[in-house]
Image (cartoon, rainbow, N blue to C red):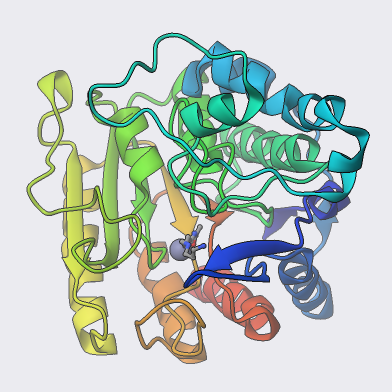
Amino acid sequence: MVTFFSDRHALHAPAFEFFRGERVPCFETPARAGFVRDRLLARGHALREPEADSLQVLTQVHTARYLRFLAGAWDHWVALDPENAGRQPFPSVWPVRTLRSDVEPDNFVARLGLYSMDNGSPLSAGTWTAAKAGADAAVSAARCLGAGERAVFCAARPPGHHAGADFMGGYCFLNNAAVAAQALVQQGCERVAVLDVDYHHGNGTQSIFYDRPDVLFVSLHGDPRTEYPFYLGHADETGRGAGEGFNLNLPLPAGSTVPAWFDALEAACARLARHGGDALVVSLGLDTFAGDPISAFALQGDDFSRLGRRLARLGLPVVFVLEGGYAAAELGLNAVNVIEGFEQG
Ligand code: Q9C
Ligand code: ZN
């Protein structure tokens, strides 16, 4: 399968995040992509450098002021104090209900809070460059589908599906799946679908397309009553206005079994089949793996092959976009299993 991979991912390398009140090493690491790259190469899949510039598509998915903030964030942080180069910025204040988010404060940490949904998405010096490489891969993949390719894999990090039009969150900065879907629409696909199989609900992708009938969003995820991102991903979120009926959430309790997960996948596939459409984007989170350190589903290696085979049966051209998955050493095998299952299916 055509696979886009850029070494620029490694420029996003924050050291730690907050977890249960403690500073802990980041779960979302450069090593993750290294394991995926190594397994792809070992299985004979050629890697291609993303060649497209995603900037125009990014302005259709994210707001101008958020893109401006993200592109300059690290320089602004270091400009406050040269010693900040060795520190990580974290937001500590957010414009929740009754507070204004239309006025952008001058204060850096206040702006960081304005553009963040959590304190769990640490920035580093190369975050913009790395995230941009992922978006470039997403547009490159869409172009490949336009040129007749059956399926393309974007093996990029950081992930994207929690990032909304104007905020980062959940280790995500630029919404690569939304960028792929928007690029497909712009190049003439009238109906696109996004299937999100990450353990966590893709709140960013849902919100970006919530009012639109041209991009169907379907997600299988841990029930937000107990699982991140908590404030979106319930079954009663079905779309709004012209987008009513074009959003399907299939939340499952933490601890759900593999058969329960595949039953939900069947329901997702039924909705995707009814949509028809010209192309599918898969937000390929692999944190549904039994060994994932921060998630609670139970998929094993073979189940990822089965997922790939099932998606092939939809008969649609597919852009696979890597999302979460934090059992790093198994991430490569699990990703390749989906890819090769799809190719066999
Ligand atoms: N710092 C993805 O899988 N963070 N994101 C929990 C708190 C939320 C996961 C730990 C997990 C986000 C793309
Ligand atoms: Zn996830």
